[in-house]
Length: 350
Image (cartoon, rainbow, N blue to C red; front, top):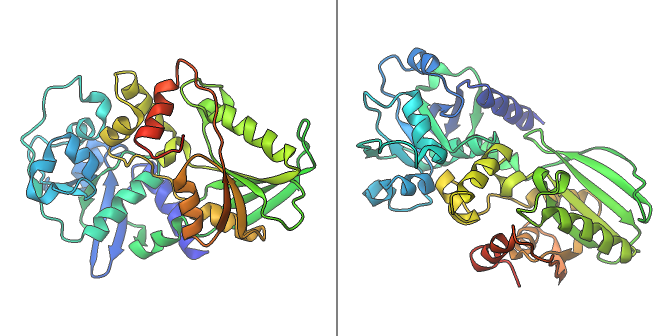
């Protein structure tokens, strides 16, 4: 899987603060994440100080750049012209919303026209896939040693490879197998095949990884209780499948999820915090889940969820959802507002 190997190398380079060349049609450029770039490296790669800064549309809107013609669409990436004071530290202060309420206004900022919007979107998608803030320096393509094409990113969510499976005894559960899949970006997703479902559409739960809730028992969300109850319901039904997907923080990664938590402590809700970070309300993709189900010989499911986006994602990827089974957990004082926002703003069913 050549594309998968390239994507893994690219993500590792971005996390380490190294530039990556990205190509889209006749256009090519190098990107360097703001979060991992150092001023010394930026000066070495861009000695004339001309590299512009690329921000997501959502982050640009927070910075009031959305009033400019080039940034009228909050979903459209925004290019910011380089100026004398816009160094590595200033760029990070712009990209990280944790500093919004602690710093003086930065500016003026002047948006510039994008030469290739597809290339810009691909650059920000790579930063998100690496778990970094959606903000990158755009450099001359010649400074990067690793190259990826925008087309290579199409396989980022569409392919999985089954790599291992084994029996996994679980307390008070039917016989269970655990199956590991690897996606092109190197993430390892897991399927628990519980009991037997006799050729009928199995009860299936798509559960996105939540370290704070699943492992530490955080009360800020309902993820831990949902995981335990899903296993109980699947066991009580005699069998089914639970997919454990590596999509922490609605797909924005653990560090960005904790940044969102800090913003929530200041009064923002989940959706507002994600937007201030520069992300959509929900960055998850369920084509990996569909590919995992197909690899297990499953093309029809009873889906255990309150989130229509999960059903729509599977349907779009060719999996038939024959029934939606509600999956509600009781609220607690710490997550009542979070659950209300999921219903009011994210479309979750009551």
